[in-house]
Image 1 (tube, rainbow, N blue to C red):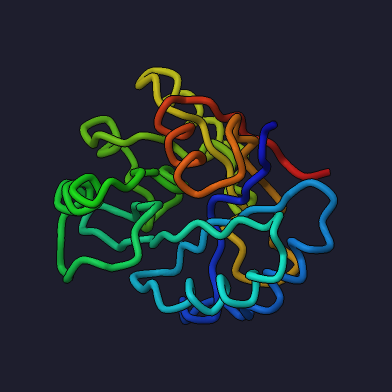
Image 2 (cartoon, rainbow, N blue to C red):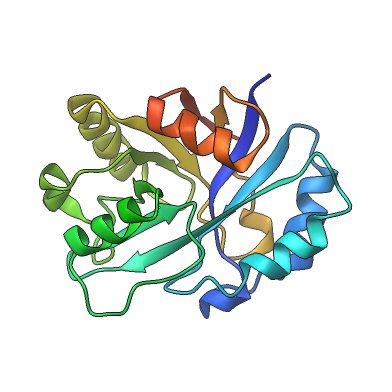
Length: 198
């Protein structure tokens, strides 16, 4: 049975986010279908255990570890890791770091000015591209969708939530069991579909 996961969520450990770990778990518990999130704080994994510990009583909630890394070319998300590389580093070095640890490499909001990878994305090997980011413009998302089609990689979605009311605004339907390992495998295989919450 597919599982719905917001693959791009920030906690207060990101510095630019006000979302508490408790708020994430409460939001997931209350939602009727979205029961998973990837914690992708900026250049830190400190928030993951806080969220995971609070989610333990709820057997239907899945917390995916991850990190959004600031590289010299733009941001990259690595899902499935609980450590961060030492800066400064290039996007290619971040990819190597993630691949060596069995992580899933995702390009978030690639066409957002300043923090997106932009045209560099053409040269960077990724497993997935965030084609639906609820904080990105339609034009930015559409450009990401076109590149994902050309590259033939998974098309993912995430809220990029930095404030509680942004959480779960976009999500990825993953055709897998509701476990971290199975979700990551499905993303690599392309068994995913992006959605915007209504």
